[in-house]
View 1 (cartoon, one colour):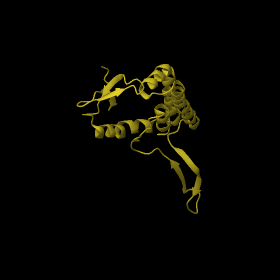
View 2: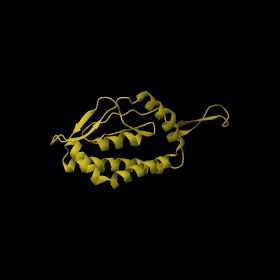
View 3: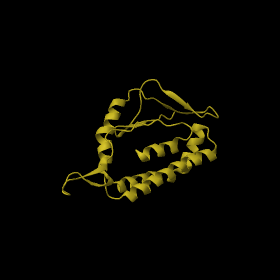
View 4: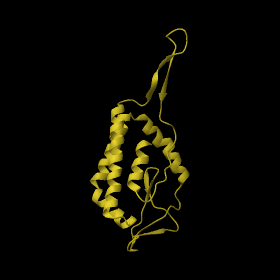
Length: 171
């Protein structure tokens, strides 16, 4: 029996306790088992805040773009395997599975090009500098900065790859 693991706090973790059986919705063939028992979700959130967020904030927009491009390339490299998984796990038609996976790679690639176009900065200027006093020596300039924290995302079941791409790319 194939037991699925979750990537939590930088390591693959097998849940404990009662398992859920995953079946092919078309044939009812048992595909795998999984469990989230024993997984510390509070620690996972803390890991995202304390390790993941600072690592992303340290990257330039271009570096983030290249990372998204690498994810898109990895998904595309495994396209046929992912199509087969979608057919078995989601009961998708082949056309819907390809639409979903290609939507993910297209979205990630688009955001990758946006990141590349923003260049080697970690913050964005918002508008022009504004003189704050009588002298032009005192000015203010708003900047846009990434938020601190973690993105917790819930995805729809019908297009899971594309939904992941849309949410992860902008986060």
